[in-house]
Length: 295
Image (cartoon, rainbow, N blue to C red):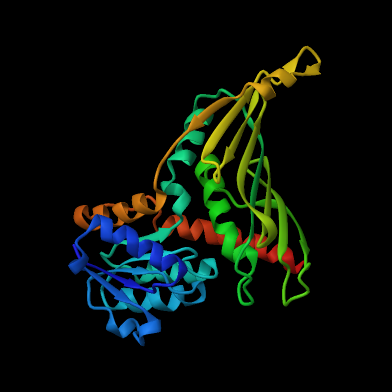
């Protein structure tokens, strides 16, 4: 196994550290623009693309045309049409897309609880992805942050086009675009809300799922999942259940899991967990959310 890493910036450097744990250092090639390198310097058959998101589409197309297996960070491209173009270029190659939460064992635990029907039928999902993060001028919070949340909703509910979309955005920084975006919509008749911001004083990554019999609260920063049941006693809210939740502390390394999947798929010619069809479905709903901002 040999892998070229195209891009070694903020996220690429994290990938490089995991690669050094998983495969011999001599089998890793770092292709970094800071060193004057370009895509033409890629020498290995298997390539991880961690360049800026706006370059993912052209880099992936170029690598596929040259016969490489590709693992590209999310988003695969900026719209569904480009993602479909990438799929059409594929022949026998592996294409894995970096929807990293699909490799997160805490999300798998949430799905396990849902499948046990402990909280009843899902009524509402709310995702909060907030941080004092990197302000971007060429990408919105939608394209930068929401692909995570869309992939999570698809994993929990299955893919369906989002409907009844409503959008609200705020430009607090007075820069070129909104730095807080909120979307409400329905997916398979479940009400969903996304809160997205890189202009927030704390790093918050939480998911709340409200069912007919209980609730699940996943706090990714604290690495905990809490389930609440017996929400009501007669006609009154049961505050005691809020004081004595069931806690699940699930440890994992999603990035390492994702790289392992890429390696295994190359070796076994198998299909990635986060494949090109997954990326296409995410992009289709990102397109719908993006269109709601224009209306």
